[in-house]
Image (spheres, rainbow, N blue to C red):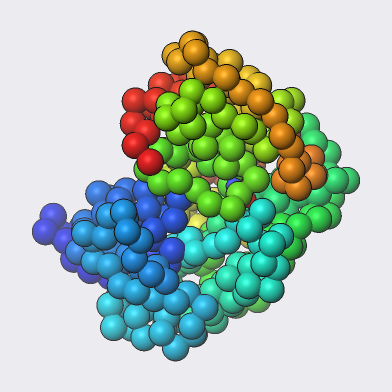
Length: 321
Ligand code: AKB
């Protein structure tokens, strides 16, 4: 259902599933600004102690078909951002739960979209869809995909489901392959790229950080503001401009732990780091180092804004987590 705003413009009625997560929390705030607070329903499986739930917040299990359907109908939702997820390292520890969390809500929402109950759907994919045989530098949009994590396998399967439903049933589902996301609003949990957030907090609090990846492990990364803007931009792009039916490559910057540490040290000169790589090293080694996102640029004008210095400044200024 389309809703009339005060300005007379038609507004979307949005449900965010997983609204308290690393991306979901910032995205929800942005959607409230863009579409009006009353048009955004934030939901998550539980309330967090520190989370900002002053939006219209409901407890909702994204894997529960009937509960999601009921929420969509009761709140006259037309657009769903499905941000509920478990990240790579956590899923390796709990593969069955991780598989369920990362695949079931997508099937739930795709089915509701097929039935015309949801009109537009966003679903996040990841650079984890790539694997050891994928070209690591400037990884193309379409290339070898042989993920070696359950998380990556779930994301790749999800991309295929999105493409299938889009082609077969004409549903409007849009998706991005997020790189590692750097944010100060909430601590990420269970990801392989999370060191790039934890390092800030630890160096501020303790002046020292033990990194779980090797110093020269380059990975594609992105600041939260870029990630959220990419998400809202792809959702407002004209449908006939979108040539990728699965999920778009998305890129901003690439760095390794040593390069990030050196930049932070400029601001916090007494900082120290040491390296104790664990099982996450193997995951990181299987992922690309740089991503070719030229298709996103061509189709809907994507361009990142934040370089490493800008990210460091924003993180050090804002970090309270
Ligand atoms: C993770 O590290 O698992 C995520 C991702 C790259 O999808 N940040």
